[in-house]
Amino acid sequence: MARSIVITSGKGGVGKSTLTANLGRSLAGLGQRVVLIDTDIGLNNLDVIMDIEKKIVYDLIDVIQNRCRPRQALIEDKVKNLYVMPSAHGYDQGQISGQHLRALINVLMQSFDYVLVDCPAGIEAGFHRAVTAANEAIVVTTPHISAIRDADKVIGLLKSYQKKHIYAVVNRARGDLIVSSEMVDYADVCQILKIAPVGVIPEDDAVNVLSNLGLTVNPKSAGFKAFEILARNVHFGSNVIFDVTKRYKGFLGGLRRKLRKGI
Image (tube, rainbow, N blue to C red; front, side, top):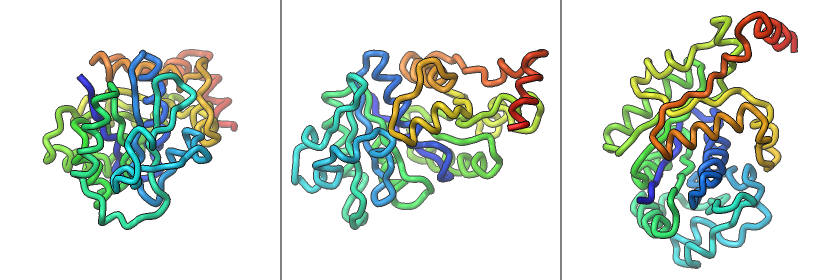
């Protein structure tokens, strides 16, 4: 059965769009047909992360206003089985409702296994519009108090929508700082949020830099492995968490922590 998942956060800048892109690629790597929808109208950047901005002919608004069919607005990614529906750079958002998005998602779910909805940050109209349209939700946070607090507020709002599942992903976790007790551990984050984690993604230059350039993540990187685990947890319902602290434990781990502090 097809699944629609909104990927949201209370705070901007936590890597939500990057996570949407890489989760989509990892799910496609499992043989699933995946479509990403960018609903951040006016401040959209999923097209840049996916390196499709020069390929856009039609966008989300064109589909909703019946200027084209949904299939015409889809852009195929370099990864097999993955497609993107880009957002518009400027539009009167008041003319788009959650019902419009829900109707579109229902159409796409007839052809895809997963519809991932990249939600605008914050809890304004764009948030409610995207959240209304999806059946499940992933809340992205970083191990910082302000991000965790905002994520907690978002989870409270999501519960009022009675989602089938609400997951938490801790992004940009630094294993060296967690081991030295300078950063909150993911287990503590999820205890505060009161929901089980579905994934932990390390702070990884291979993810941050390459995603900003519209390139795919190196399969040998820690970030790539963490996204693979996240995709399997989402798809199979498993509960394996990538250990961001492993390489920073023991004697060699201590040396790595010192070296990273010196950078």
